[in-house]
Length: 275
Ligand code: HH2
Image (cartoon, rainbow, N blue to C red):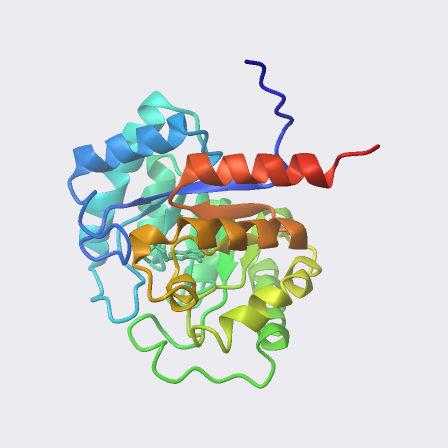
C-alpha cells in the first residue's frame, strides 16, 4: 500500500496528563511508567509534539504544589527526551515548573493563564527563551465556569490575546516564539460562548501568530450529543479540529492522535486538490 502523504499543514500535539483528575483520562497516567507508555504511543501514532501536564485545569480541580507538579513532569520529560527528539511542551501556569521542564528538555511553555499567574511569568518566559503558548481564559480554573460573560466573545478573546502577545514582546519574549490559543472551554459557556468563538476563529488566526486549538473531548461536544461522556467524543473532536484547520490554525491539541492525523490528511488532500 502506498502512502500518499504530504507534509501536514496542521501539526498535532498529543496530550500526556500526569494528573489525578484530568477530565478525560484522569488518573490513568498518574504512574510515571504509564505516562511514558502513553507518550510512546502518541509518538508511534505520529504526534508532531507532546504536551505534558502535571496539574488539571478542569473546572473545580484542586491546585497542585509546584514541587509535586515538578516531580510529576520533569522526570517524564527527561525520560521522553532520552529516547526521542520530539518537541515537548509543558502545560503549566507556574514559572518554577516551566523552568524545571525546560531544563529537563521541553522547548515550549503552554500557559493557560497567558503568563499572568506568576508575578514574574513574563520575565521567566523571556529568560528561558522557549516558545510560549498564550491562552485566553476568563477567570481562573477553579471558578471559571461559574458565570462567564461576554458581549462579543471572539472580539474580546482577540483583543486579550493581542494584548498578551504585546506584553510578552515588551518583556523580551521573541515575537516568533509566541503562539496564541482561544482557550475553548476556559471561562466560556458551553455552547453560548464556545460555538461563536469557534465560528469566528479566523479572527484569532488573523492576528498573525501561530494558533493552537484545544477542542479534543471537550464538554461542548458532549453538550451537542446527548451528554456523551469524554471517551465518546472522538467524532466531535475531529469535526472541531477540521473546522480549526479550515480557519488556519497551526496545531491542534489532541488525545486521539492517530485518528486526528488521518482526518487532517484527508481534509488537506481534498482542500489542496486541483483538477
Ligand atoms: N485544554 C486543556 C488543558 N490545557 N492548553 C491549551 N493551550 N489549550 C487548551 O485548550 C487546553 C490546554 C484541557 O484538556 P486536558 O489536558 O485533557 O484536561 P486537564 O486540563 O483536566 O488536564
